[in-house]
Length: 105
Image (cartoon, rainbow, N blue to C red; front, side):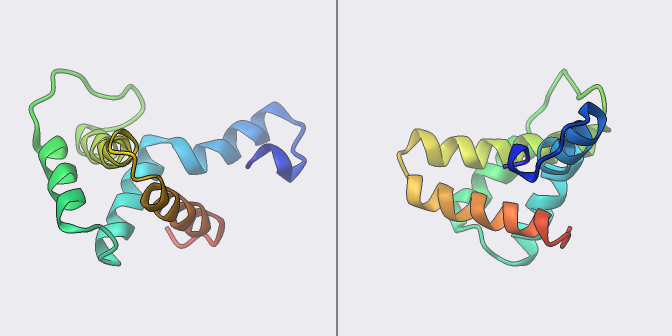
């Protein structure tokens, strides 16, 4: 996705990639998904369960709240993948990419 933008400088490529994959970006995306009410009941339950779970680790570039929110977002995507809900997974990922590209977060 980012590679197709024709970026050749490492720093610019890294900066652009972080808009999609950093813990801060993932936390912002899950907030946007929740505000738009795009998660179903099961997905919301998975997000909250993982976000609220006790963890003995934290991200090196994120505070604990951002890290937990990001981890909850990852858990939702992982759940969809592990349960073979690929169409739903694609729908959420496409929405997230569009949101980042439109700078709606």
